[in-house]
Image (cartoon, rainbow, N blue to C red):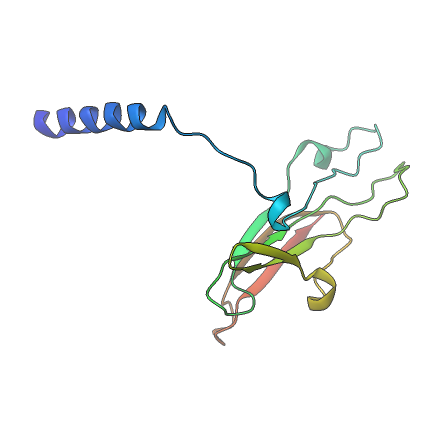
Length: 133
């Protein structure tokens, strides 16, 4: 037992030392993945304004690349912006992202909080479920 604990400790230390030189670069926008969440707030402090939104990774077009669906906030009473918010689906084309929301018809303009995906009806296609406020 103590050997396993010692091994875990050693692996943790090595992982930390290797990770110390690691850094991330934000490439999303340069590769076409442009999304900004807006909670739709008006200053009234609705509960849903305090939460982030859901994201689903799914292969909606069955090309074996994971595509991404972003849930978006919606209009709350007192909203004073001109913009209409909607959920977005981006198709992954070998690391380049294309907004296919309108083409696929999944631009829900409700106040979306979360999403889930899977083959619910067992037909081989990915089904997408979105929860709205």
